[in-house]
Image 1: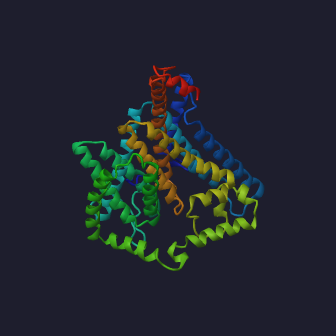
Image 2 (image 1 turned 180 degrees about the vertical axis):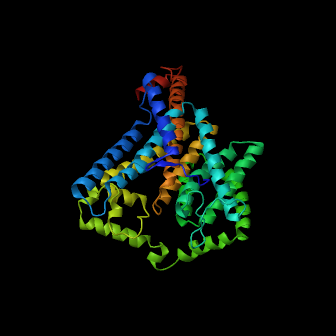
Image 3 (image 1 turned 90 degrees about the vertical axis):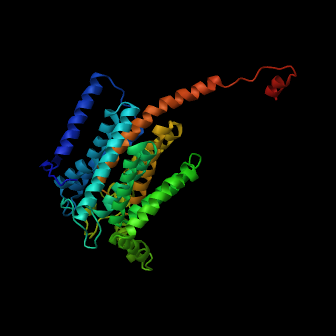
Amino acid sequence: MLRWDLTITTGLSAKNLVIYMLATFLALRMVMGRTPTQAAGPLHTAFLVQIAYAMFTWLIAGLVIEYQSYDLVASGIKLKGGLIDYYIFFAVFLFAVSTAEDAIKVVKWMLAGAVFANVATLLDVAGIWNLGYTERWDGRTQGAIGESNQYAAYIILFIPGLIAAAVTSRGFMRLAWLGGVLVSCAALVMTASRGGFVGLVVACVVGAFLYRHLVSYSRAAGWVLAPLILFVLVMSFSDYGGLLTERVFGQSSNIDINEASSGRSEIWANLLYTMFQNPITFITGFGWDVYWSFPFRFSPHNHYLALWFNLGLVGLFTGCYVLFGSIARARRASIDARPPLRAQLVAFVLGAIAVCAAVFFVDLHSPWGYFWMYAGVVMRLALCIEPQAATASAAERRERPRVPASDSYGWAGAGRRT
């Protein structure tokens, strides 16, 4: 966020070094303490299968097929930084946190970091604090992440968590979290990312369906309308409001599908046409990071198609499972959680759904690290709640009144027999 160069050598940064040290320490602690490692087992399995298949296809692509312009070393570094590191981030934050209270603390520090990034972006754009952030040629803010669409995905991941923190806080802290929500929404508008807004809308619609039995629409309206009115008033005096309106209502309504999708439809058509020329690749994929060995002009702009193109059905299924499996587990835990903990579980479900929708139009790189750290902490929170829910259910079953064998009229016994 502060544009510090943390690179130590090729493929290794200070951030990764810290994570590797933490992972080593946790592994030693778990071995010495004989700590069970079955936590979130299916997610670990899906991650490891994806990594194993990516390594296999990486070697096949570089040593057997030898695609033209395929760099085995560079692709190996991308494999470490773009897949293995994400799993390490997830595992470290899953196993380093042991209690629900600690999980909530870590989540709030992540939310505070997101607010800091968005405040830094606004200060840089306003010229108050020059951090060297650059704007796109069309005036869209690229922010702390360095690319407009990726930055928007990062923002929508944490907006629900900020709202949950405000709802569960009191006094000054509630105002501070609400301020973080407004700052984040302002930064989102400055990105003018349609994918980000689509993700947010999808999260609201799907979330309203998933939690229809928990939502108090009258209370939700009070929380949403006031900040929305203030937000619209602020944006109406900003140049970014016009930029967003032009992209959403101008470019999106264009009758030319290629123009309306900013060229994505042509990119996806070329990708699928290349796979049709080698139908076996619909099953196997071309190999890890092979996309950039073909003469494509632009990135895939679709996380799922990129997985399918490079890693085939194995990569597509495992990649989707680690995303939607984490959402499903958090959702199940949120049903049984107490209100203070439930808020952050629901927030993760909504934020993760928003990102899953956004990556249908966006390629993510930097934000994935934050996503998997967030997911690791929330999975620990879910694991802390699941035994409590099981114990409560067993207690309810024991306390449930039993039907007597008979009563003075003989109806109970007769009813059981019938």
